[in-house]
Amino acid sequence: MKSNAITVNGVKLKMKPVILTLLIALVFIFNCAPLWAIDATRKVLPKGICFLHSEQRNLPVVKVTLLIKASPLNEPPEKAGLANLVSELLMEGTKTRSSDQISDEWEFIGAEVYISTNNDYTTMNLSVLKKDIAKGFELFSDILLNPTFPEAEIERRKDLIKGSLKQMEESPDYVAMRKFRETIYAQHPYGRSVEGTPETLDSIKREDIVAFYKTYYRPNNSILSIVGDITLEESIAFLNRSLSKWEEGKIPEERAFKISELPKTRIITIDRDLTQANIILGHLGIKRSNHDYYAVSVMNYILGGGGFASRLMERIRDDMGLAYDVHSFFTSDKDRGVFQVGVQTKNESAKRVIDVIVEELKKIQKEPVSDENLKDAKAYLTGSFPRRLDTMSKIARFLTMTEFYNLGIDYDRRYAEYIHSVTKEDVLMVSRKYLNPENYVLVIVADSKKTGISNKNND
Image (cartoon, rainbow, N blue to C red; front, side, top):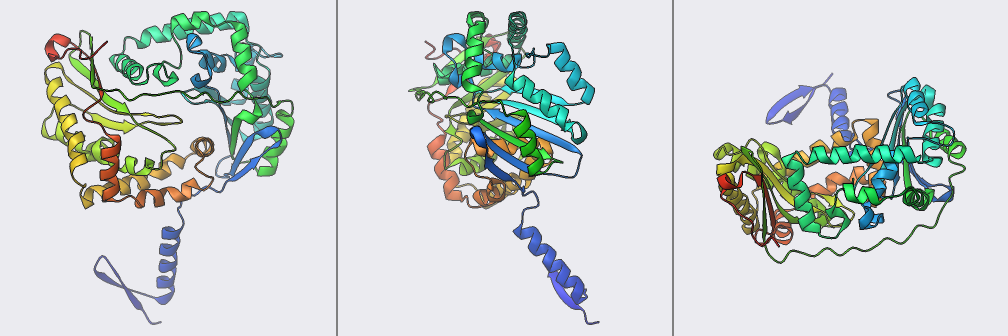
């Protein structure tokens, strides 16, 4: 049989036609269809719930993520922590089960349930074996539809949250972040702790909890994804049985919150007996819906989001040996997030490290990044993307996020295209547009005498 040749990296390889044809086919497939692409279905079910489904047969497990648009954005500031408190109380008793019974029944079938609230939404996550799916949906729907919010559990949960807040105040990282966000956001809900404060928790009554739950925990205010060893038809059948009594409600219009840019740099020092200065420098960022999101992602990778490959790490750690880690990132929320650089260094080197951070912010605004920088950033961002989808839990969460942020059911297929379309000119443009080395918030938790840095414009 005649052999043909093909050149790979400058080396000519001989092989039989059938092998060559197969190789070319494989290369074509791998380059044209992302291996991580999700086969998903989107439906809006009766009563308004947005439902996303992806059948994954590799394990006999089912993962469920329910996103409810209930967060600090929906609570009055004097009752900060209300949204989080509601979510933490869901498993503390229903009309037919006590909190102990709920815990025992989850444990008996080996299921995992996790409920949490962040700045933009609340999520309920379920992981259950396929053979126990009926029981899993029964319990899941019970805690969702029938919580009783017992008075004793409310007080117990408040005490636990207060204890946690007190403990977090011992962490310099937490203190720096809390003060940073308070300064950036002022009266915006993003500027306060999701858990609230001891004072705001004390102001929350049972009627507040019940009213918040009844207002926002509605199917027409939710996104539900089911991923795993279950067909679309099976999923819908379970939902029709377990959530049939979940009634729609009138959801209040979303409140608009004003966020103002700070007119000048603010330096805030918090004196602690520490050997290391905990530093955060940053300012307002962008919304997730911003069309420059992908160029910003590439730019930030080069600046400080790329670990050992980033400019900040190269200068501050590798060249100067002043920190073990330095990083930058943009948060991407429903409303405007933040840009921030975080680093820990010796008190005595804090000033120098801060100067270098500002120098690097200015540098990336002055001239285009190199071809190599751009290529490496794109390779990492696209190459690491499949890790967001390498478990069923991640897929379930990913589907709800793409829906919440209106990214589209095919976002997983289009992400690489968005990143590869970014040019050096785009990186330069967004660095000038979204980085502000002149006006920023700088928070330093450290031994102030040793840093030699004092508060500036700190009203």
